Image 1 (cartoon, rainbow, N blue to C red):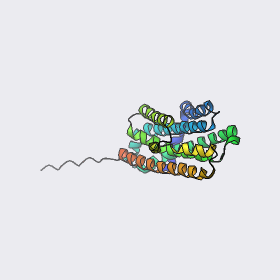
Image 2 (image 1 turned 90 degrees about the vertical axis):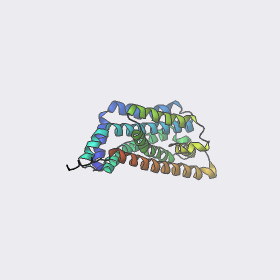
Image 3 (image 1 turned 60 degrees about the vertical axis):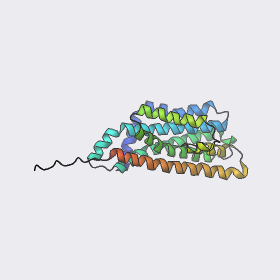
Image 4 (image 1 turned 120 degrees about the vertical axis):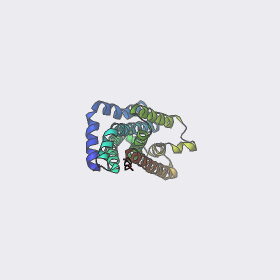
Amino acid sequence: MAGLVAQVTVHELFRRRGALALTLLLPLTFYLVRLDTHWTALRLLAMGLGWAVATLALFTQVSSRLIDRRLVVAGARPQSLWAGRHLAVLLLGWVVAVVYAALVLGTAGDDLEHPGAVVVMLVLTATAAVPLGSLVAALVPRDLEGAMLLLAVMAVQLLVDPEEEWTRILPLWSARELASYVVEPLGAQAGDYLARGVGHAVAVTAVLLVLSAVLSRLRLRVVTPPLPAEPG
């Protein structure tokens, strides 16, 4: 069931070619405007990719609310619907992440300390962004409000000082550590940056998945009305 839902979701996403192209080209714009500073360019690319993938997940969840409710009433499992829609956006996000990683390696690969970690950084960013978008979709009534909320989250991550301890609660904080690992000559500390980045991304993804799954299950639950009392 989840596989079928994923196929249908991918088909629906590709029907909106214009919106899909504009959304996925945003990270490219972020990257190219700061290509002269590799660390900043990579971080902007990760933030742009995170926003794009999260927005696709948001649109997918919001646009499917009505049909998902009907499918659940007809007997479909809410978990299968949730998993299928996540899987579709996740696979698309991974493909885009790999494409952008190839672009980075082609334009700046010779200047990076650990170029192979670019793929890791972007794939983890896309992975965390999918449940982030779904969680926002469960919290807001419409996709426009959700897109603005996601934009605000990404703006905060770009504007705050990532050295501050509290910034670790931000969903894509890992991009900062991984970008440093990719670009900077960190010496003996390189492994620590990689471990912190990967660990944070995995932990955030797990938390967001749980929250998104719980809220989705609550939203799609079928409430059976009580039977009328028999006449006395």
